[in-house]
Length: 304
Length: 180
Image: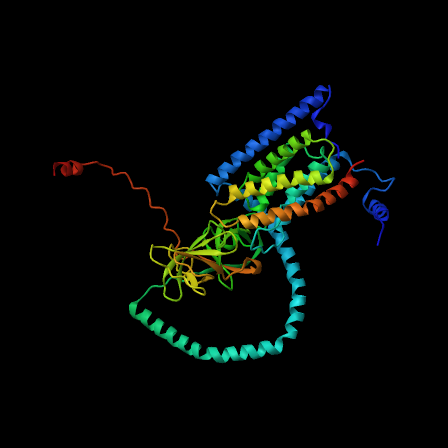
């Protein structure tokens, strides 16, 4: 293929000027991009409205395609499930028998727990469900991990609310449009969730790694003694995440941090429930009213 | 098994304009590269349930294919606007593709000016350099350095480079319909 002759416009002034102008515009575009990039780096919420506006248009398309894909994917699933029904039935019966004893113990513990809580007059805050919606797409070509939820501020979704699926925590709402909301997934490198270990209640932080896994870190200098199979659930510290939602299971041994696999797999994200923030941030303190008369009180203090 | 000549004539019959068809109007011929690049960017809105970011940046692939196969189809100020649109749908910080696509366009310009007659392999190499530059730059501006995304990024770069011939084929097919 021959090199383009575009760079040698000949003697035509018009061609020369238009080529020059094109390059000026190109450089201006790059500078503009650099400025926007700096703005969005230092103030990530700056263009949320613009992005939410575009998401309003793309979410219905994503949703419609997802519905089509679900319809089609039902066919092989249904056929496949016929072949294994007998084995699955036997396995499930055995599992019910094994777990019936644990169920009784669990019921007892629940009753006792409720009684003790009544004795303590503990005031519980339960996360109210805002809306159940679908995650219609995730950012598949970017290193950031975001999901797009097809419910927004018109459905009551607000910034910072936790989003969980049937398997466990999915993430939290970053910003909302009228009908869509951008969700920061657990596995994003910027996501940090306060958790505790089910085994002994030890608190930890679950920080996303960016590669589909989560790093569970200790919050102090002591040995965390993370073992494979340790299950971590949200602790509710910080007031955003509703406590008790499963987050991740540790994969390898670790002392101060260990990789863990989240329960909610992004490849299986479908239905999601948005909860109200566990303890929403307090309203901004009212500005102190200027005292009308700066009287002798300061003078009296000075005397002392 | 078809002979290459048969395949060629078949593809010509199916893809190119037939002898007495009118060519596209200048306006829509000029708009066509833009719409195809934007359609490439919009691939990200399909319902991908992605654990890892392995989807190639189809908008960038289409843009590079247009630039390398039909140099006059996109002016040097086009990648800034196309990149802005890509940023809005891709989840990258706003302005990153705007900057990186324009820079890679200048990179292609520089290599174009210094190369003589090129074959497709050389075009592919130029596209590979640009793709690697844009994806690595996008990773640097979007995610902090400590994140564990680099091996996945490398895989994404390789997939994108391997898919470039497909984008080039598509662009060539569209360009046949477009050009007079």
